[in-house]
Structure formats: structure tokens, C-alpha cells
Image (tube, rainbow, N blue to C red; front, side, top):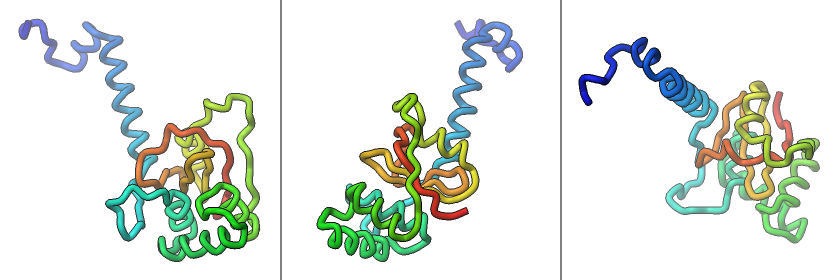
Length: 161
């Protein structure tokens, strides 16, 4: 009934403490996630569903154009005789550039998400690999063409302080 609807925040909390707290917590979580994710898609044709996450990650991490990142990765792919987006190719390229891959401990393989990583690494620029996806985290913010915050981190490279 309409007359049963509380009017103030305090009366909502008094009458429905669990529901109210859950709603507040939900909106706080949404606000934090929105702050840690920013849409980023430098692909010149952003309307296609391209498998170019590695290109986007390199473009953001090294502050270069999508085209430059694509050429770098393609040249490495040619050298390695593999597709530019494979983990092996972009891991080899970063290794040749002097960056070290760090693995996430296997204590809980599905527990450590990109959101967790971004929260714990709020300074610096990182390229993260999930096994199926690559993304850049810069100063605690996830830059991607979709909110990949729930993906599980397998490894990462720190590319800038």
C-alpha cells in the first residue's frame, strides 16, 4: 500500500535495514566500478567487433595510435610465425622491449579479477593477460572497449611507473 511506503531515509533504514543497506552497498559498488573503468577504443572502425584487444591495450599503454600498435604486433607475429594477437606474440614483444611478465599465484585461479588488480595497483601502467583477453590498467583505471573488470587475471606486465 502507498501509505506504508516510508518517506525518509531513516525510516527506510528503520523499517527495512537489510534492504536499505544492500541498496546503498550496491550503489557504492557501482560507483567504484564506474570510476575504475573507462571506455577506450582507438580502433579507426569502432563499430565492428574486432578481435583487437591486444592492439587496444598496446595503444593505451604506450600512448601510440591503434595503427602503430597493430604494425608493431604484426611485425612480431611475422617474426614468430604466429597471429599478432596470440599471447605468445605479444608476450615476446614485451619481453624484447625489456618488460618482465609476472604471473598471478595459482592459489585461487578464479578469484583475482581485473577489478581486484586495478584496486591494488593504483599507480603505474600495466598490460594484463587473462588467457583470452588483454587490457590496460593505468593508475587503477581499466581502459577497454567493454567492462572487463570481472575477468580473471593470469599475468601482467608493468610498462610504466
